[in-house]
Length: 124
Image (cartoon, rainbow, N blue to C red):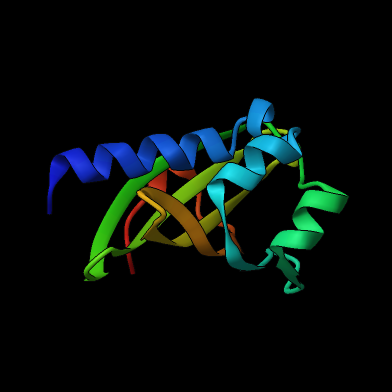
C-alpha cells in the first residue's frame, strides 16, 4: 500500500482524535463527510448532524497499529487501536475514508471496546 497515503490518512485520523478538532464543530465539519455515520463503542448510531450539534467525546487518546486497505478507487478502510487514558479503556477502531471534493473525508467509523492491552497488540 502507498506509504504516503497511509501517512496522510493517519495524520487525519490523529487530528480527528485531538481535542482541537473534537471540540470544534467547524473542524469536525471539514473532516466528516456529509453522509458520515458512526457505530459508537456504546453500540449507538450517530450521524454528522448529531456530532456537530451535540459534540463528541473529549478524551486523551493515542493511536496505535494503524493499517489501511484500499477498498475501491478513492475509498480506504483504516483499522487501528486506541488507548483512551481519560476513560481508562481501549478500543479497536475502523474508519472508511472517501476522496470527495478534492480531499479525504471520513464517511464511516466504528469503535469496539476491548480488554486487549497495548502490549498485546495483534490481530486475532
